[in-house]
Image (cartoon, rainbow, N blue to C red; front, side, top):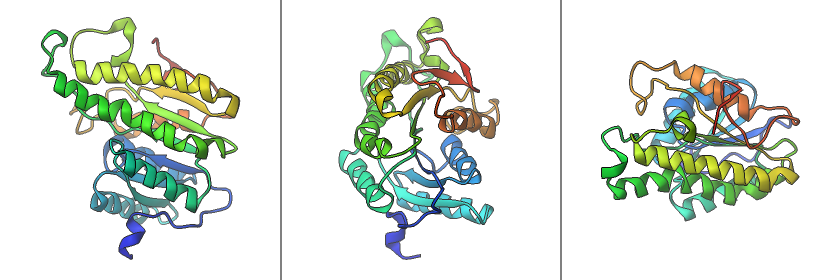
Length: 248
């Protein structure tokens, strides 16, 4: 494969295929969401910060299922220029985006408490967990508006629910709570364009971030997939796990 193929989606896709972009998709939930979307016939733009890791993950998913259309697209959600380049490439290749899944996240800071938190850690988490999805929504809104069935999914966490919030994992929790607020705002602003915008908690999943003992990655990804494949009359501005509403 030519080196440029790692950074630019091929210009053609199946005429009926929906185009989906997944951030933070080289491992864990993002990778499994990419696999499940491809299994359903989507053309998947698999993204991550490391171009080599992005290319390997896309190659492996295609090799595992010969019919899967998974394409590598290096993307750093904390970098304005990287996000703008990715949006330009998707525009040139497809002219639309049907599904945007903001999955990239960092810093499950179990060692911190709110009253003693290192605010530098909080700021760093917010850059990926809140401002990253915000950058993506801003850059890709025109492409979502160009879709006949647009979906935007913010991967959040029940830890962000104000109803039962405690003092632990302050960087992660606060950034995800803010992401939930952003979800509500985007849903209100994009409702008239038919974009369904929802937040999803995949549950405690056995990933590098979640640690051992959680539910299988496939189950967490299926929760995200539910919001990504809602019918046109589906909900917007909601918070869900496994298709069921969660309290804010």
